[in-house]
Image (tube, rainbow, N blue to C red; front, side):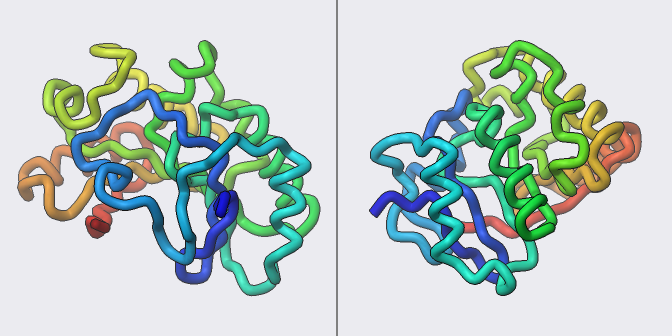
Length: 201
């Protein structure tokens, strides 16, 4: 089954693509093909807007707290569709929208995309992973190379101007307390929140 929408706890997740510019050493895709109440998040083909919109009809939207763009790929790889679906969700159900991203959307799309999120995204959650640029490159292995870490931080800083809630995250099992303190300081400097999330695997 092509899982475009899937439930995780009390949120509805949107899986638009399997494309991603990163090859993270800890990526869930290496060890599983599903998350939450999904069958498989590997898409046979990328959906168009009409297909995604029709999928929402299968769910009782009153049951969900939030709509989250997060699947087995980087959602900003399909930015135009993401924005169109987010607008549809807002206009139809008025639900809060969150985008879970690696923060490399500006590099992917060749422009600053943060202004385009204004009024459509309530939360942008960005994978910081580590406060150290060299460690980031080894962990995330982005195809854009050395510019990636700074581009991710720049995206976060821009998002603060346009999105009400910007969060940078790390995983609880991967960093020392000293590294977490450095992450927290980075977030303070940007004006974003810092969240240490549980590893799911």
